[in-house]
Image 1 (cartoon, rainbow, N blue to C red):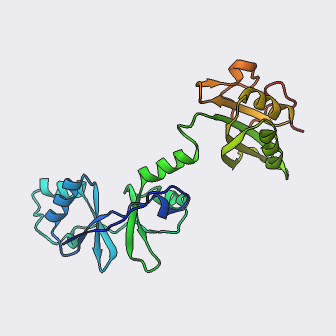
Image 2 (image 1 turned 180 degrees about the vertical axis):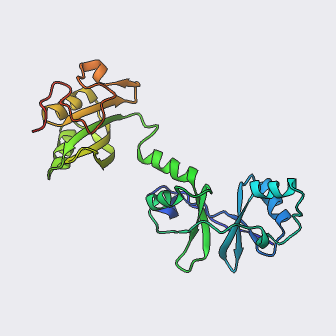
Image 3 (image 1 turned 90 degrees about the vertical axis):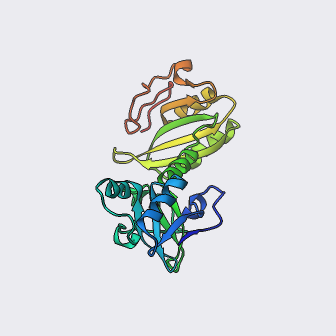
Length: 249
């Protein structure tokens, strides 16, 4: 037999439950390998979860089943005899970065999603995670992306927020990561602001190293318009005053 789980996740967010697919086609352990291949081919799937009592106990891939068929092996055998161990599952409440980290290095492009009881509730795919990370980075939005290099000091983010507010801007995305250079962070901001060049100058004048500023509305780098001193390829962990500002001390 084969099952189709109803439902789905329509919203976007930072939890697996927000990006998973709950409309999952599965096969039971008693199904034949041929049935699994027919199901996968009809649905355009590269792999099919194998379940028993609601739990995912294995996975079969179309690549492996076609290989067996070409080698002359019979596909009229229980799928349980040809299935592979399932990928390690993630929970509905897991963070998407946990799922991404777990997916690295494993051969399948999906992870099973389970509830507290370990029952299969859906899958999260590599494509779904990639789309969500793109959304979090603001890909496709017509705003300005600023890359700043900051010393690790208390209150830096509050100062930056105040500068943006003073210029009538709205921060739509913000991502911070520790730099390879000790004592520094790289901050990437997506800002909707009427005058991105003026905001870039304000960052530099406040002592923040402006590594890059790119306006996605017109597809132009801000520095090319106002005499940006830093080269576009400068790494974020190499602070530079840029835009005529003074370097951080």
